[in-house]
Structure formats: C-alpha cells, structure tokens
Image (cartoon, rainbow, N blue to C red; front, side):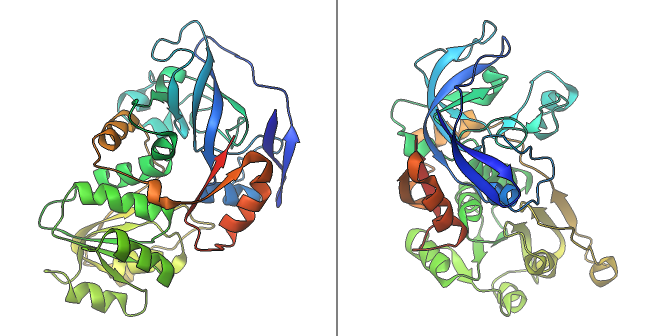
Length: 344
C-alpha cells in the first residue's frame, strides 16, 4: 500500500509498505477513505517532535471503513464507517477513567498514531484499543463532515469545555487557522456574550467575517486596546491561545482581565516564558496541555444535528498519490488554503 513516511528530519516520502496486520485482540484495521494534514505533521517534519520515530507512516486525522477487528473489539465491526481518534488510550488506567486520555499510561498512550506508531496518511491503518479510538459515523454525516472529529475538532471541543465559558463572557481566540476555527465553532455552542478572533492573516479574518458575521475580528496590532474597548471588565473573561507563537503567548495574558481563564491550546516549537512579575496581581488561571479527545461521539451527534459543520474548512482535495503537492500547499499557505483533504 502507499504510505507517506517520515524518513528523517526534513524529509517525508511516499513509499510502498505492507498492509498493517492485527497485533492484538483490541486492534482494528481501517481502510482509510479520507485523511488530512495537520500542523503537528509539519512539527514532525521539521524535527520539533523528538518522540516521533523515523520510518513511521505519518498522519493522525482520518476517517475510513473498518476492515478487520480483533477478538475483543465490541463497539465496531467490519463495514462500519468510523472516525479515528488522534489519541491512543486504554480506557482502563487511572487517567483514562478520569477522562484524561491524553495521559493514558499504556506505552503507546496519548498521541501515538503518526508519531510513534504508523498513522493514517496511507491506504490502511492499524488502530490499537479500537473500542476507544474508533467512533461510528452517523449515516447522514459524509466523510468530509466527520474528517476532523478525531483531532482538530476534538481539540476545539476540549478547549472550549475546559475554559468554563459563561453566557456573560467575552471570549478571545488567538489564531484563525484550522484549530482556531474549530475552537470558534465549539465556543459558539456555549453562546457567550461576545467573541473576538485575532489573526495576522487578512484572508483568515475575511473567512471568519463571511462564515461567522457576529464574531468580532482583529489583527495583533493594538489588540489589548481593542479587547478592552470590546469587553466589560478591562479585558477578555476567557482567552484561548491557539496560534502557538511567542507573541501570541504574551498577548494571551495581556488581553485577559484579572482572574480570567487563559487556555493554552497551541503546540509551540520551543519553551515559553511566564513573566510572573509583569502579570503579578492579575490572578490568572492557566490551563494547558494536549487534547483529551474523549468526546468524539458527542461531536458526531452535534454534526448530525447540524450544530457543527467544519466542511467549509476543506479548501483543497488531493489524491494520496499527490500528497507531496498537498503538503507544499498547506505548509506554505498557498491559494488561501485552510485544510487539505487527501483521498486514499
């Protein structure tokens, strides 16, 4: 089968590999129908994910059809259309039982697919702990609508959930890329009083204005002043940092009102500094970490009910054979790209 492979830092190649086989009774083999490229894949490519294993098939955002299941799998069966979770989790350890599946204690717990074990930018993928990692797609939901459920939409849903958004809140989202736009949709579910989205790219701000006309948009220049002018208590009640740059990390706490919640969604290329003397007295609550992607069934139901729709984010579609071109487009933000779907 064709599989896009991490060869060494800076180099991915489309290779012929054997189809994956069941390795345990809780595994499933999924025939990938549609996958996507994530910014985390670019982090692997450029060497900023040290735990990524050279030789693995990359990709952790995909949907497909169950081909084969292990003897202990009960929630899916061959022929089911499914989403694949970005995280591998056993469902039985202390962290899984508390819903903190990103911290699953299994050796492959957390983000493993496309990082430490073979992922889904390929024709087939093996999914460990299939009862936890796969969710059946409702019949009225096409692959394109379900594509982001297991990763970028799971991230947005988790981020909005832990941010404790209330109806009277002003919410600031830093970053209008794919994760920021999924976060925006999930914040809208909480129906706060006001949402501000900041991005440096005018095209992304135009996308937000077109699809979400009630959302205020702004660039990073003079953003603290803009937020203060459009909030009730001297700053945002909730800030979600999705962009992942040192500048946006600083804007996150600068734009927050005292006693606000600042949720760090982004993955950074390097460490960030928390300037405690500068923020002394703001009494901020920081929430950080990787997505706990254990609400995929709920997001699929919201999609089926018409309350979430991420298909506008898919701006380009490529066949797997042309995935190199898809990466070039996505990495260099050509032609107004937001997300790329790859047909496998």
